[in-house]
Length: 117
Length: 109
Image 1 (cartoon, one colour):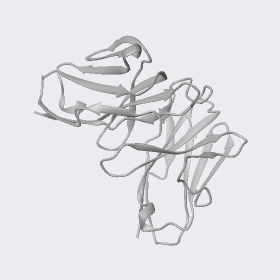
Image 2 (cartoon, chains in turn cyan, purple; image 1 turned 180 degrees about the vertical axis):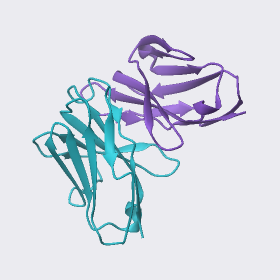
Image 3 (tube, one colour; image 1 turned 90 degrees about the vertical axis):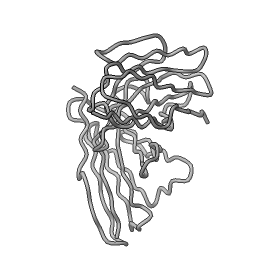
Image 4 (tube, rainbow over the protein chains, first blue to last red; image 1 turned 120 degrees about the horizontal axis):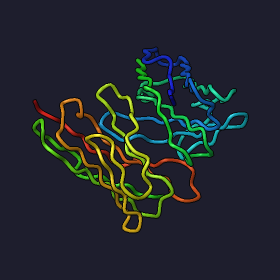
């Protein structure tokens, strides 16, 4: 149980295009999903917290107009990187929890590698 | 915000060896988890352990909340144990995980 999927697993795009990443909880309902970014050989940094049916909460320094998050259902959250640039190239990982915030264990998706040329 | 430091940053061991990874955190925590990130990037839950001791096969973990540290023990290491180990915590009133700096473990056959 507690499986989280992400799609696509990797994407290469040209500078200026927008990229959408999907995060799904396959066997449980996730009231809260989290989006992280990880640069090579670094730790995970939380970008935003996504709550079903409400606006996402962004961490300090994360541009909400650049990283659009939608949590339209209890099993799906999407992250759209708008007008991507090479500095947005990174490993993006989502996680989902079935409790309130992190009161229960978070389960992580396999990640999406984004390369912007 | 809460600070999470892990040690050692890198560890290279022969197959069959035992290891201890440490996670120090700067404030009281409501949640502490250990993860293994495999070479493909997938984060695998190892333990949810805000306090006490747990064991799962060759792995065990202990969190001493009053002293603000947690330990992850790996016994009889195998090459598949290679990867990066992260601890992550959330502090009371802040419902989000802060990840530690990680320990990169390499097991040599």
